[in-house]
Length: 377
Ligand SMILES: *Cc1c(COP(=O)(O)O)cnc(C)c1O
Image 1 (cartoon, rainbow, N blue to C red):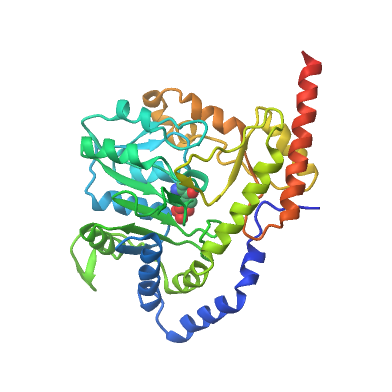
Image 2 (cartoon, rainbow, N blue to C red):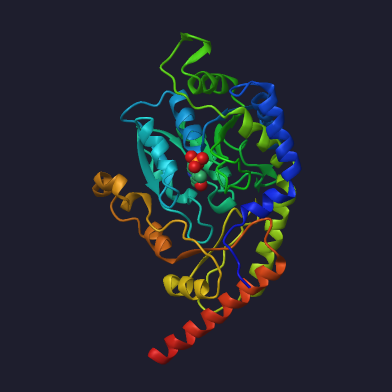
């Protein structure tokens, strides 16, 4: 049985008629940028996240970048970011003119370790961006307490965690503001790029609204040097259809995750994801760790099982940040993650039988690798 890493086509088949109806509604409307669909989606997504405001933007990177711009970050400012995130978190900080300051994760949860943040705070620190990596909420309470004490903003990178909860509260409304991505492969994905900012801060929402549209409130009257970063009507109409399915689809991801955990626990030398009591993750990715990851990945590929690596190069070792390495020095946890993490197939349209096939294959390979290791000693 072949198991693809993610099958978006099947997901869209389930809502095909509603999506086609949404597309033809937009087509017929004759209005394609900043109209009724975006307004309706913003209202619906704010309600979903439990926030007062939502502002649609062009993508997740812009969502984070525009939040930082709206807060008025300037060159020389510092923003704390996880060392093991997708590079977009760092890029948003760099594009706002500030400097990303990496903090290592808790190796069990993959999320930024609150206990390590304070030593990274300097007089120039303005904000912390916890990432809810792989769909699991970061430990927000200690981060918010520290931010309060030091007068910092907390901006959630929620690009992988639509619908995840922390102590029963949805991500997107846990900090001062949050950035979401609707890249097609995300838990809530468009048929192209899209993103949103959620917040309870009316002034921030207003600033982001102006920044996303050339710095203007009234067409051709520009208050600030803004950007062109808008969620378009077509994507908003499609997202409204898929938002209605999000909870069901996240629930199916949870069922796949529980099969994986049940059937793979005890596999020799395999590290399974750990879910703390406060977290109800949405399993954007199901990430295991193994010290012979590349070998495991190849063996699974030979059996038709698709896997990916999130992420093979931590940002500080990427060419893009080559000039910064001497500042950050080695980040051993992020580096160990990048050489050991493996994302198994995951998605709302994966069959339970497929999850069992993947689990059995992983377990078998881990057992064989453990035997090889004992024989080689
Ligand atoms: C996807 C992603 C982003 C960026 O979103 P885009 O819409 O691709 O720009 C930012 N942060 C994280 C953690 C992501 O996974």
